[in-house]
Image (tube, rainbow over all chains, first blue to last red; front, side, top):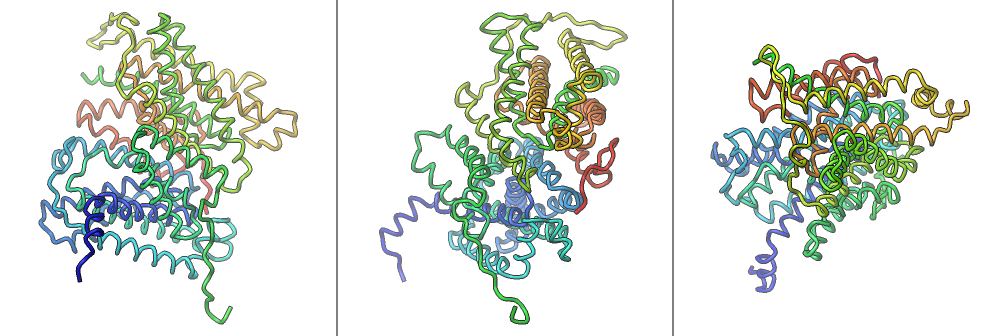
Length: 286
Length: 293
């Protein structure tokens, strides 16, 4: 079975853009998981960076095959998510946000100053092992998984917590545990996308995972909305394609992402694709 | 050597304390983590830079005008962004997201306008003399920073403790609705708090700009990390804690840079933040303010 020539051309010309769509989609989902549980973590870019660096090191220094590297690259993000999440999730939501927003900048200064991870030069010559089908396969799996979870008892609990954490906990939902599960899932998704990005572009640098990408990832999810997992992915795709359409205005792109967040929170709290998932009936024919 | 490091640390810490004081005042009164705060820091530095470079003012005028300018910008931006959110259920997280988006837009717009380059104050703005005493060297800029921080902090404490305005601010911090019923104009008091906190950030920006003589749009962003560390270690909304934690952070950073590695000072600061979250989330000095779910 061979591809039509024109499709092959398109894939070749726009390969980086197409891969970015998948990777940014995964990042948007990693943001969605936390927001859907009523929490705000701003460490997605930092988790992505941890996945990228640890994945690249596992490939280049340990020589592991990619099918081991990919899950292995989730370890470091999850460890950091637990170190920050366990103490903060018992507290009010601002603590998690504050603790995670600084993480990206801190890790940047560490990458810059540790020679083992390349310092200011970053890591070069990472083998390009992330195939298009892997990126979109994972994106599809993650979207489907989150859709099914969203329709289940878990999803109902998450939505209850988002609307009113106090009432949810009075109904017997262990809010702190759900929050931690959401944060860990989010770290896994961000770590995977970082690992894929590193094995797609062959180069990673210390400045790619700081403040600006963290805010950009938030704008993906807020533009699309957090009522269902398709919305943040659509938001990510829109904001990834948008700069391609207006290449002349590179300075404005970042400002635009910021403005989108402001407008979305103030005027569009459900996002552009605001429909909420129908619930699957559970148990005794509810 | 150690004495010199300690002196440098305290001087740096004085600015951190000043910066964090405005941040914690904002949170303590308006219950908002205002991430545009870092922008007010950059704005103060740039206003002072413009006044000294293009108008030829001295530091004695440029510092207060930078602070006032940043305070006015804070009033304008805060009243544009925050009042709509005050009555939402998840007001804390919504205002965090709004101010986060706003601050990225502001930094990006400022960079597009003024360029990303590091700028410096005109040479000779502050005398180059330094005093030496028992082998410890103190520059004129450092003395200025210490005196200015001390004066500003004293003024704020006096304002909060001994004036009707301070009483009104404390009442709004305690319970905005009850304060309104007692005849306090809550909206106006909130604007005053925005102004005060913006002015503190602006003053901090001018002083840090003088200390390192390097000014660029994103300077507020790296400062915010210090702000987060100080308000968590000191306790959210606890101004006394912010002062102590700010001084401590300055000393720790200088010591880390001097004896470990200068590139790791952010990491050390962050490790302290996480350690405090694990052990004493209410802050080292404060009472519990975090609500348990």
